[in-house]
Image (cartoon, rainbow, N blue to C red; front, side):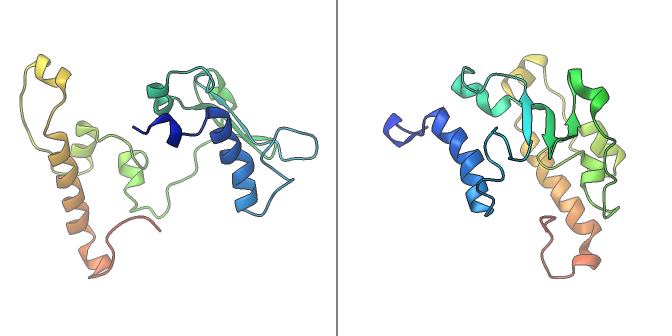
Length: 162
C-alpha cells in the first residue's frame, strides 16, 4: 500500500510497538523489552512475525498471552492454561451476543439474538467470490441495535465505544 521509502522495517515497527508504547504510557524501563527487571508481558503468536509474508501479518494471532508473569489468554495448544472468560458487562452489551468487537457477523447467531438478517440464495461459486450482501447485513444489525436501545441512548451517541 505504501512505497518502501514510507514503510518501517519489521524490526523498527516491533520496537516502536513495544518500547515506544512503554514511553507513551510513561513506563520506560519497566516494560517494553525482554530483560531482567521488566514486566514479563509477552505473547506466543501463530506465526513468526519476522518471516511471515507481508499480506499475512494481519491474520496471525496470539495463542498465549502473559501479562505481569500470569497467563491471561490461551488458545489452541495453550487452551488448558487460559483463565475463564470474564462476564460481559453491562449485560445488554452487543459483545455478549456477537462474540467480540470486529467479529464477523454470524448469520445464525445474529438471528438467534433477534437481529434481522437478509435472506438470500446464491450458488457456491458466488460465495467463493464474496457475497455483496454482507455489508447490508451489517447495516441491518446496526439499525436493529439502534432501535432496541433508542430509549436508553435518547438522542445521544448510539455507539458502544466507551
